[in-house]
Every structure is written in C-alpha cells, then in structure tokens.
Image 1: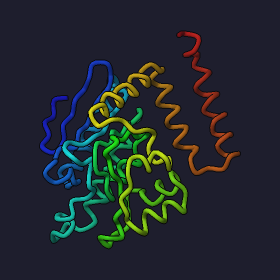
Image 2: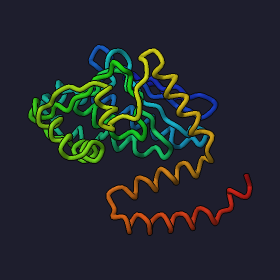
Image 3: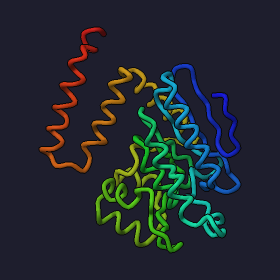
Image 4: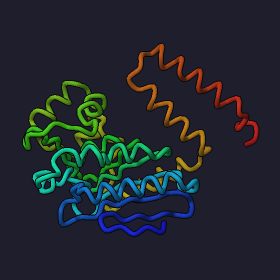
Length: 244
C-alpha cells in the first residue's frame, strides 16, 4: 500500500491478509478525526484490492482503543458532527471480507463499539472492556447500543451500559461478546491462524456468506429463510462447486 499514515500502521501480507494497527499508544489509541480519516482511507484501499481478503484490526500499546478523542470533542467547531461524518464502524463495514478484531488491551466506550463491529473477536487474556457512555454524558452513535444488546442480551447490556463497569476478557467470552481468549503474546498469531482458515474458503463465497449473515440479522425466521433461498439459488447456480 503506497499511502503513508500518521495514526495507523497498515501491513499487507502476500497471502491476502491485511492488518490495521491503531497507533496512538500515548493517547490509548483514541479515535481522533485524523485517525478515523486514515482508517476510512485504508479500508477503502484494502477493499479495492482483490488480493486482500481478510482484515485484522488491532491496537498498539496497552489499548485497543479508548474510543473518541474527547479533547477534540470538546474543541469549538468539532463537536459531534466529526464523529458521525467519520464513523469508523461504517468504514470497517465497507470491507466485504471478514474483519477480525484482535483486542490487545482496553476497549472502552467507542472502542467497544468498534470491537462489536468486527466479525470475529479474539481478545488477549489481559484485555478489559467497558461501555462508559453514561460517565461522560454521551450516548453511543456507532451502533453500540444495538450490537451490545444483540450480542449479550438486553439484561446484560443494560447492566454494562448503565453501570459503565469494566469487565474482563474471561467475562466477555462467557457472555458471548468475544469468540475466544488468547495469551497476550500469541494474540496476533491466533488472529492470523483464524484469518488463514478463512482464506481456505472460496473468496467470493466467503464474502457472500458474510453478507447473508449480516442481512439475516434482525429479520424474522421466515424472512431470513426466504433471503437464504434467494441468495443460495443465485450463488449456487454459478457452478463454482463443480469447478473446484
């Protein structure tokens, strides 16, 4: 990738795995406007590259990300509009292939929203999570309230959201918020191993299956079954299976 960035690191492996590392460790990788612009640019560039089939998102230092840069939020003229215009969750969702969140440390408030937007979450055993919107007088705007409730259930979501308490990677996996936990030193290896398993699938079908699962979420059972049948007929008539 030719572009150079100041707030993120981007690495592309020839086998088809790209890694974006949020890289403001001195600021707990808070999502400044510049960082969010860079993530959007990087994701769009990676998505346009047919060789890049799986994206791994992680952070540097002791945080995955602590959410929005509240110093910028408080600055005159920036307020909320910047957060919604440069929505990092929407940026990640433009990547058609799988997005693996390698949660290396703190994932707080907007950082938890970003984590929840990933397709698969692998957390270091030392990672900690919190939804502290109520402590800073803000409401989530990147889908956090919706995804948290769907991931852990409405009653657990209310506990986490209304107390703002921190919870561990072990609790996160027990509640179904993350897929599994890894030793901190092996976190990226675990994420890469998962990515390589995904690479074994037929690329367009992996993308189509991800889209199908996303589109089925929130529909009724009958609607989901009907959508699956339509997509299945369209995809399976291409004869990819016969050519393998």
